[in-house]
Amino acid sequence: MEITLTVNGAAKTVDVADNALLVDVLRESLGLTGTHVGCDTSQCGACVVHMNGDAVKSCTVLAGQADGADVTTIEGIGDPDALHPMQEAFRDNHALQCGFCTPGMIMSAIDLVQKGGGALDEAAVRDGLEGNLCRCTGYHNIVKAVLAAQSNG
Amino acid sequence: MYQFNYHRPSTLDEATSLMAGAADGVYLSGGMTLIPTLKQRLASPSDVIDLGAIPGLTGVTVNDGTVSVGGMTRHAEVAASDAIPALADLASRIGDAHVRNRGTIGGSLANSDPAADYPAALVALCGTVHTTTRSIAASDYFTGLFETALHDGEIVTSVDFCMPEAAAYEKFPNPASRYAVVGVMVARCPGCICVGVTGAGACAFRATALEEALAAGFSPDAVDGVGIDHSEFNSDIHASAEFRGHLVGVLTKRAVARIA
Image 1 (tube, rainbow over the protein chains, first blue to last red):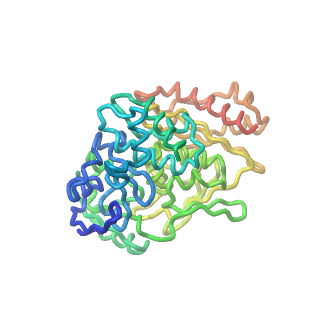
Image 2: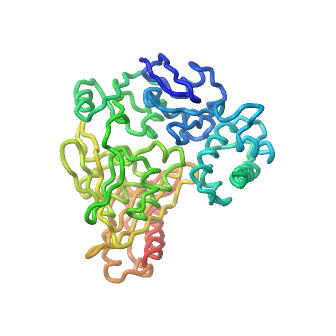
Image 3: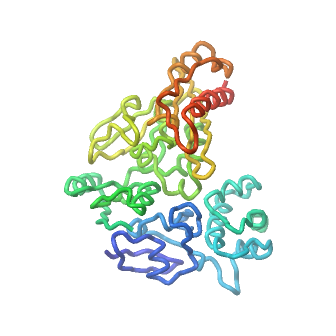
C-alpha cells in the first residue's frame, strides 16, 4: 500500500507492506538511520521520533497509522553547524557515551521540555525519561543536560 | 512481523463492516499492546482494522455530573484533563510518556489486561462503556482474564464516569513495566463509597468488604482488620496471591488517607 507523510518538513510518498512499522519506513525506505532500533519491544526508546507533535516509539507504530502524519526525526532538528539546543546541552554535559540511545533520548527530551512549561525539576525529568534506557547508565549527565537545555530556553 | 491485511476505515460503519467480512479480524486502537503482541506472534489475525482515522472518538467532556471520555482518547489527554483529578493522576502513571501519547482508554478497556490501570477507575467511578451497539455498566463489563462483555465486532465509542466528591488512585507498579502489581481507586460519592481493585484478580472488581468498612467510618484505620480473601488472586513471578492481598489493604489505606 502507499502512504504519504511529512518527514522533517518534506512530503514523502512511500510504498510499504501492510505490516511495516514506522521505523522501517524511516530507516529502510527513507534512509534516515539516525532513528535506532534497540529492543523492538517498545521498552528502550531508541526509536523515539515526534509524530504530530508527540514523542512516540516508532517501532510500535504501524506505517499505515502514520499515513498523513507529520514526523520529525533526529535528522530534522538541527545540523552539524547549527545544533539544536538540546543537542548542544547533551554535548556540553557529556550526556552520551556510546551514543546508541542518544537520538531517542534527545527526541524524548525535546518533547518533555516543550510540554514542561519551564517547570521541570530533576524528578520530573527522570520520570519523563522513564521510557528511554541508556545501557551505559549515563543517566546523571543526561538529566543534567535536559535541565540545562530547559534553562537555556 | 506477522503478516496481516491492514485497513484504515474512516467511519464506524465501515470499520464494523470490515470486521464482519474478515476471516479473523482485530481492531487497532493505540496499538501499545496489540503491536507488541503481533510481533511476538501471540495473536495472528487475518486483518488489522485501524480505528485511528475515524473522527469524533476523542476528547473529555463534562456534562451534569458525568465525565465522558471518547474511546480513542489517548492517556496523555486524560492525564491533562482536570475533570476528575484522580482519573488524570491514574492516566499520568500508565506506562511511559510514549505509551501515554499513543495508548487509548477504549483500547485498554477492550483488552482488559488484569494489570491495567483504567479498569480500577471504571469500577470505582461506576462507569459505563458505550459501544457501537449498546451501553454496558461497569459491574457487567469485566468477565474474566482478558475477557469482557464486548461481542465480536463491537467498538468502544466512549466511556462515562460518575463525578466523585473525592477520589484517589494508589498503585504498586511493576518497576520495569509500570503495570499495576495491584492498583486501588477509592471514590467517595454522594451515598456511596467505591473501592475498585486492579492487578489482584483475573479482572478488576469492587472490594465490597472494604467499602462496607469505609462506609461505617471513612478513615485509613477503618481498613485495619478487614479480611481480604486472596484465594482467587493472581500469583506470578512478580507477587504471590498473599502479597497481592496485603497490597489491596495497604493501597486502600493510602488512597483513603489522601482524600479523608
